[in-house]
Length: 135
Image 1: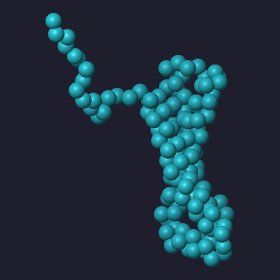
Image 2 (image 1 turned 60 degrees about the horizontal axis):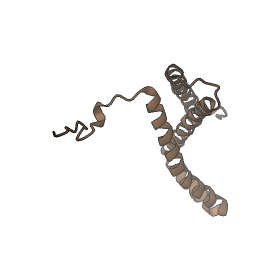
Image 3 (image 1 turned 120 degrees about the horizontal axis):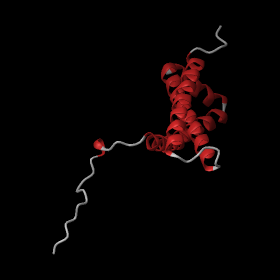
């Protein structure tokens, strides 16, 4: 008797419906990787800007010439940091038992982190694009 192998030959990722908790977990990991990648150039620019006045003004002028692109990249970086922190706090609260580890609580807490991320992103965007100390 021949056993039939019913394993899928290939996995079509476009047809898989991930639960919202899985999406939040994947986004948290992606945000962590992005932060790891982004911090290298940021620290390099900081080191360069602190090395001499000449280097500082080179970086300042470069950022000033590319003003809107620089602000946009700064805003994206802030959004990634916001999401990673908010999702990390959720994970810590679940790990220490302050939030139940049930599917319902997982769905509610994920919706809360998405809403908080959107609100804080909009607030940071307003503060970046329309600073309070305008002349």
